Image 1 (cartoon, rainbow, N blue to C red):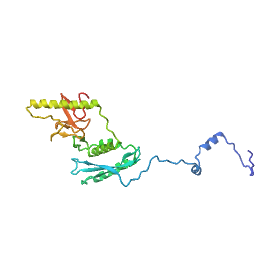
Image 2: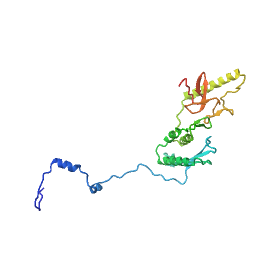
Image 3: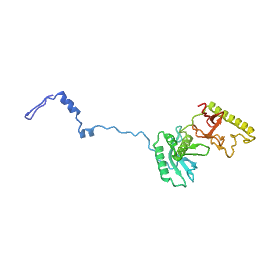
Image 4: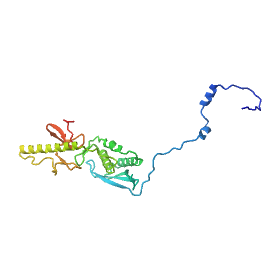
Length: 261
């Protein structure tokens, strides 16, 4: 294409391929950048406002660390209500007690947990994180003989129970063989207790594990089983149900045995 020159030529230079490459490498002017088309950012989440009414459950914690009980309330929101995709998800958590010694960290913890619940996604990781918290002063045994390494760990256990109740978590199914093994171990220990009772002249006239636990027995919630007070804690199921049978430590709750691994 011809270009008409109206002014006097004072000088000229030939543009080389290197000059073109340098020109292309230079940053574009700000005005040019602002004029370029921009992509719209799409937020991949749904903002859910808190309804006026939420359904939930309240759990009681009676810990030897506190004089008064703690009451843990977890409220759920119902998504897709009335459809086949209806789902309950935790939305907020509150802890109330007459004991106000630890009010600050309890409020902070519940607010953080509530924020995680509202964020959505997989919130089950809270259970493992909280149950792994250990009190440097030592843990305690809750009702049923289950060991709790800290108060935070028991809160994690409550969250786990709640998530199971609304279907977000599931217990691993115990096989029929495992159930049969536990029943066999309990029956064998009962027989051993009867033999010891006869030898000692009636020191233990009844089996130390029975359907109706005595006052000194440790009651285990769930199946309603009872274990002898001399039982020690099982590191696998955290229950005081380990007894010595045939020279081997055996758990009467989960069937774990050091001899069989």
